[in-house]
Image (cartoon, rainbow, N blue to C red; front, side, top):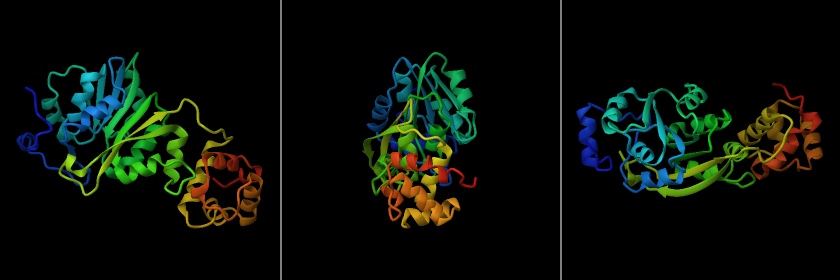
Length: 290
């Protein structure tokens, strides 16, 4: 039996038959716009040679579109209450596997190796707003064998994630995203596309994973500590922000900035990845306390 998962009345009846109630704590908003999931499935690159890791399938509306195009789909869902719903809506679709787990705790590398042998793999997800950055950074920092990560997130978050370092809109997460991937803003999704309707609009972005970082630095961990320190107090000058954030004397930080050719009165939002990488390689800042 096929289900029209973009028909609000049909979705309500389906959920009622399982005694399901939306969880505000899990940020559950199910996609009911019939045009969005096909676009996401196409733009994420799913085809007969691709395996797709989906995060948060909900009731399976995007999962079904991915399964039509991809060789295999593995959907990781946190909410155990949705597993019987998904088993019903995806019944008969043989190239889908459902996994009830927390994507931030499960061994994704092992899952990918077990489930997608011989396939190139991409990730596609409609992420709850409250967990957007943790999930994206977890996927990127683990350096999983993924070609890209296509996600729907709150529009404000999308603009921040895709902002090039050195722009006012950028933050620490923008720098990290640009270091690990090439971000692309694909299209916007209005709030009316969801059930229940959220208070804000969303956007779909794709992060094309880089094979090599765009900058070189001797200590990647230190570079990201400097980035976080620079943005934790972004209204302060780099001299003050880095001194406080790295627990270093101002004169030591000032010397490092001078050697890197960066003004002591500059602010973190003006620095590029190249600037941060160069700063992290200055000898007098390498001894920063861990």
